[in-house]
Length: 241
Image (cartoon, rainbow, N blue to C red; front, top):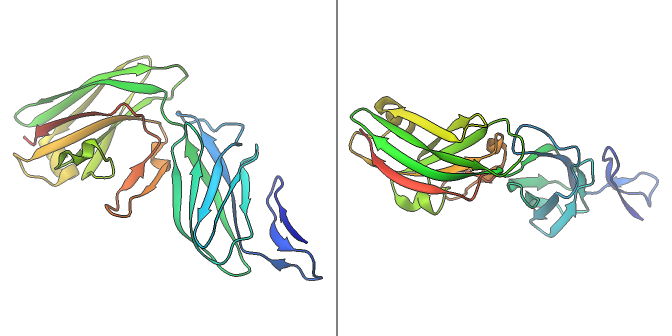
């Protein structure tokens, strides 16, 4: 009889039909959901973990966030963590050897921000650029409202945030609803490695405080795709001073 044991601490998957149990290949770990601030949630249930490789399989975490995917044929898998309202998390090329367990340890999933970007304005000058705008809050208590700015040399960044040369952020302390980012010519040279006169396209989005922990690497651009971000994207452009 094959057993898959999932308790407060996951023991793993094994075949108990023999005197010396054989460990079956599996992927296990636990998930910690975070609010859009910096607070872990006490209930870690409801996160779906999917493995896609030699076969496809999925499980849902219990209240403690624990999961086990088993038995899995040996091979390489992409493991995806998803929950409604949270940023998607992916781990690529998880290799499961024969008769071994793979423990992914702790994985963080981050709630999408509870505030929206309502406006964006860019004011370039001779040696600097000011980026300003307004936010609106939809409820909740926030550690800080993060605004992320993705910059590229083409307007593709307006539709696909995996296409960017560089990005930077600014933090707004509630109850303030105004954000501002000041970039000097030196800042832009360091961030973008672009010369004066180059056209820069910028997309601004709201982001959860821990948004850098949520996402995956785009296989074509090799940029990190951040997923704990808002849907209210604003785009504009400016010329490097």
